[in-house]
Length: 287
Length: 334
Image (tube, rainbow over all chains, first blue to last red; front, side, top):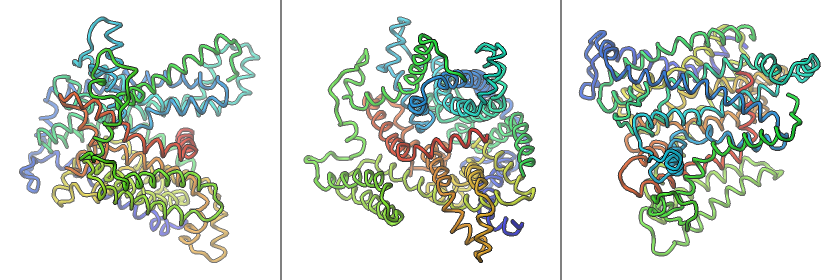
């Protein structure tokens, strides 16, 4: 394909992405350097690094940062291990049943996130099923407290994200060559050794892929924390995105929220850049 | 891996998998139960598993004034809507051209959705539902049209710009949405476009474009170049051979991408939350049901949650193959 034809075909899409992704990012950077509230939307005042200083010295920003990190550290390994174990087990059962089980397990992944959280929350309402189970087991009533709301956000994130890891690992296991496993079995490798040395080695690129995607997804998590905390500050369970939203929409400081968004963008680069370099290399080879 | 033979171990495997299915399903199961309870039953402790079901929550959610007698026109319209869904499912086996039929069905659905508020007084929830349909349809139409062109271009062009565009698009897909959404808000407020379908649709198309072009490109790359070269030999232009030859062959892949775009648009919360004031879509409207001291909110929220899930379930049943295909394509390619 000639270069000119290429640009004719990709033109509309490139234009839209330039206008509504790259330009907004530049605007966010620019808004971060200005004083903008709802009263002076059309006349921002340049204030330099003030907003950034403001964000970095805001204890609630660091609180939401710590909670987001905690979410990543707990949920990403859990969903990967759980997804891998379930994929291994799913690989063991009869062909005809696999589809049914897989379809049922995909439900949390397909349902609208806000609705899924709402459903999840119903279980823990004062008259909910799990609240009752909790009371029967521990002898105490279940209340929404700082610890329990944070635990619910973590639990919901695992519920919501595990199916993705499961599907990816399951698809990966289907491409594992049976000859390799047979050879290993003949050489006397037991099942655990086969999993460790063959399945895990084969799935390693997928583990990296799922890990990076999940870190980036959990890092910007918003919907479930919104529904579970209802923006109530007493739970101290803000994620980075949720706190930025509150600063923009509730405190009405569009400038400070933009600075925060820019800082979170810089933060994700640690994970994003290796991912992009990887993709760039593989695309250049494929070309 | 080779199957485990030990029957006891196999029983344990089925047990563990079933437990995982229960864990995935229990929120939906419980919400479904709650949505059919009276307010009193829903708030009772310990929770009730057996009760007399009632449809009141759904009627209250969808209708503003509950009519004394059930209007026959509404009954007729609902029958038509349900009938159309069945026709759409069975029509797949008919031999003649489906295009006209699908357009006809789509037209009738729009007509019924427009007629229902004339027959009964509907509640706000109905409006949010219609908003969601409009925004989702608009996003899919624009996103897939420009995405197909770009995906095809990227699949066939060997220059370095293609790689740069793809990698940049991927980077923007991974970035926290807040970085775009706040400028959108600013733009919307300055131009007065906030709370319009246009702005929400165009922004949704933009944020989903990276996903769309990556996925469509992977489908176009599976089509051998010889096919369009043959068409171009016969005198067709690049665009003509693309529209007449390539698009029909890639159609299953395009449907699969469209399905994911529907899910993305239907599910979007933060962007719509910031860009709308009252023209909410379902997820944003749902978030309003989550709070409050009113004991009735549990049943209403449950009915709303189930109502918002039904269209997705219908869609998934209808396009099950494409969904699995898309997931597998995305998963294996990375």
